[in-house]
Length: 301
Figure: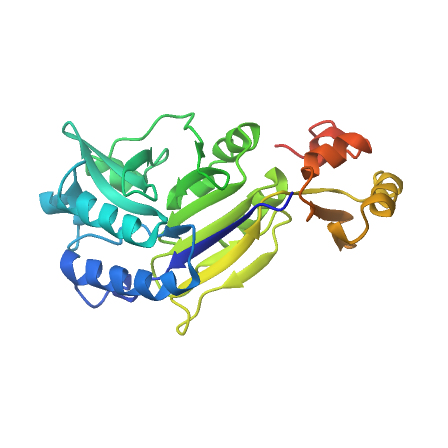
C-alpha cells in the first residue's frame, strides 16, 4: 500500500568559503530555511555537513564547534523539530565523553534525539585533527515512515557501507555532504535499490535520487529548502524475465499497480497504490523477482 515520505533538504549559502560566518549566523539561516520548507509539511528536514560551526581555516580547532547532547544546540533543534512535527537530521560535530566525531544527529517529531550516526570514514585531514571514526557496521533507523540510513561526505567512496544498508533494508539514504556526490551517489542507489537525499554544503546541488539512480529533483538558488515526496512502498527490479508475471499482476490490480519502466536499463520501478496489501505481497503472489534474486546477487558488489 502507498507509503509516502516528504523530505526537505536544506542548502546553506553561508557554507561557501570566502564569507566567514558565525554559528549563530548559520543557525539563523538554517532556521529561516526550515521555516520556509515547513510550508510543505515535510516528515523530515536534512541539514548539510558542517552547517553549524564558527567558520575558520580549521573548524576542528575551535571547541565551540563541538556539540554535546543536552546543550543549547540540541535543545534548539529539538524545539524546532517539535514545532514542525517533523524529524530533523542535523550534521553536527559532536563530543561524546571527550571523543570527537563528525555526526548526523536525528531528532524525532517530539524533539527527542533518538539516533546518532558517526561518520564511518573521516578524511585523513579529519583524523589528523582528532575526529574518530564511527563503527564499521552502522545501524539503520526505523522512522515512522520507513527505514533510513545515513552517510557523510567522504563515506560515499566506500562501497561496503551501502551494501550493508541494502542488507539491512534501508529505503532512504540521508547523505549530508561537502561535495554533491554526482554519479557515485546515483550508482549506489542503482546497485542497492534505495532512494537518496543529498544535502549539499557548497552551493545548490542538493538532490533527490530514485532506486534506479535517476535524479528526481535538484535544488537551485530559488529552492534552497527543497521538498520532494518519495513513494517508499516501491521496488526497482528487472523487467526482462519478469515481464509476463508483471503483466499478470497488472491485469489483476489495474491502475493501482504503477509501473515506471526504463527500457535502456531493462528495469522497472513498481509500486502499489491500493490499501489492502504491500508491493512485496504482490511480488510474492506473482513470483516477481528482485534484481538480487534474478541475478543471484551479481549486481551487489
